[in-house]
Length: 618
Image (tube, rainbow, N blue to C red; front, side, top):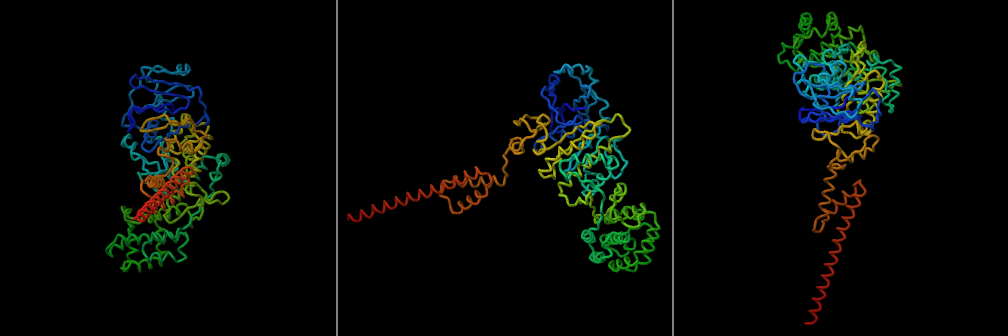
């Protein structure tokens, strides 16, 4: 299946506009005449694998890129949609049959269909309802990637029926596949329209290990070796855990509690210490939110045995610091009481999550999980994907993770950009495998939209994105990919032919002076007015240079301060022609002022000589 053309009657700021996605067809729809023209290009050249259709959408901010991305997802969406529009797309299958998929339930009929290729004409069935490719939604899964801090658009909320609006594709549920409800998954996670950095880091770690459940080692090795950058060949072996004692101290805002955990016996991760941290955070919450001593006896526990034990033993302490000391002494006894219970998380009082420190709940879940896994000690390292998944989802903020790869390479040693790209590639591979049903013969297509994928990557890594994505997808030869890349980076566009790019301006597809992008020099692309309409120079430098030009245009004599400003700015200009020109103008200005001075001095001498001559005649 290949995406040919998108017609937008109205969506946000886009009205009555068509966009060509296929490099081998030129399509045009005239709304007034209701005429659709489809012309096949004779000079078409395909450089991408046959199972991958690539389109890039570029344009400045506010040009309509995100609106088109949203429509592409909605048009391949299998959920029930409440808001009806007349936007539609053209697709062509391997048998050269052209279909229309629309958000509207109304039939789309054309008075005229003009197709230049006779073979294509024979593939058109002249019945309006036949243009609907009714199985497209169940045959397609949508993946949307946007690494920016921008929260997801509300476009889904505007189109989904009420019971689907609370949809949450939590990746911590290993076997939860939302394809039965919605055929779309967005990553990184912005669950509940909130960005949880720690959770997204954990998800990336999980994806690196859970991919092993879907891709055998030998196949994964082939994929990794295909990357031209050796750092992208990073292959994880295990996850190491360590205590961030500085963060633990910062989180324990009570001075006495900080002193307690500074003791060397509390600076390692052990089951005993996890209980100690748990109690300290409970007491910390009491200290922060309770005003009366009586409330200290409650300790936010709903279990009667624990309550009575705490009241009997510690109820006499009105000073919380003394209370803390006493509890630390009796930590083993408290552990015995807790261990008799089924679950630590279940003995906490309901409706206290807004009052208790968040690490209280994470510690409770972690201790419960270790008991469930029959682990008597906290594991310093794990290599089992299922255990990694269960432990990661319960970690308190002060327990750090680090992925160790082959050759003992540490993931933490990579730059932020390197981590981002490696995490993205592993996540992309994992989600493709995860959302591809093994028992379905109908499932054949992935609609992948990468929105500003270059965010957080330096230019060198931006140049690797297209190559890395293509190498990741080409191994799934039984799946057809519709890949749309939304970007404004010439480092990415130099890997994509001009025919595969939609240039946007003011919500419309426009023609540019760029004859070719594929293999083009990055500087050449940047120099085009489409990318840098105000030139390549930074605004701050431009302002300083303009200040120099204004000084040089003065009619009056330059002051010493003026000359100093001009000389200091001109001396650091990197562009040689501009530097030489301004230097020449400054010298000319100074020399012309010196010449004028000499002329006046000469005139003064002549006048003085004339005066002296007149005096002698008297």
